Image 1 (tube, one colour):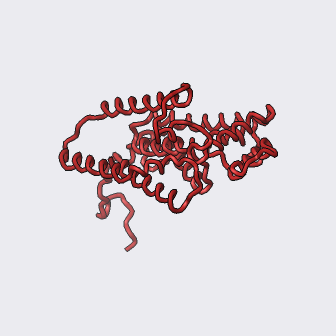
Image 2: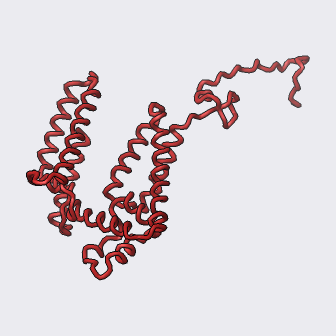
Length: 281
């Protein structure tokens, strides 16, 4: 419910910006929810308050119901997308068409960016399909593909607004395959060690980024932090082995340093004849 409140607040802000400040046009997806921002925010706030003040310390195992509802919602969304795009004569769903029907205007002209990026890749020779046209060369590749038919809208795109599609165009099949392998290896390691401390929150952050990458660009200022998250995910999921010696940097047991039992040495006697060296004074 808290996430829902933030979502509708962000949607309302985006809707205001789209209508009063940034008027490029197109069909913005998030801003479309801004028409219901006040109602959605109020509903989420009321539900959160009811759950918070009525349940208190009681815990209700709703994870099964949550999984069922999530599966139903995802399945319904996929079915609607397929029907709206591939079924001839499918009835209009009103404003939902802006979200379900993919065309050049979808997502503030992301449909245009995806179409021209895919077309530019398919027009490349085999070796460039394999190796790509080069990092940062998306705009040049599109301009060469379009030629004299390039439009003013096409000229505005310097990124595909889909990281995977842009990797396919700029790095080729091999570059995209390397990135998918890198991501899959880290997520697989995280899934195998999901219950280890720190693995779940870092993995969820990475999955959120990977999902958003399907409709966004790779920001150079943010991507180093993403790679740090991958490293943190790998370290958190790693089975650290610590040696029994407390001062060794390699431990065989993760808790060896925490459960270290030190037997205190008996106090040294300063009496003459104790066999210990005496101080000079």
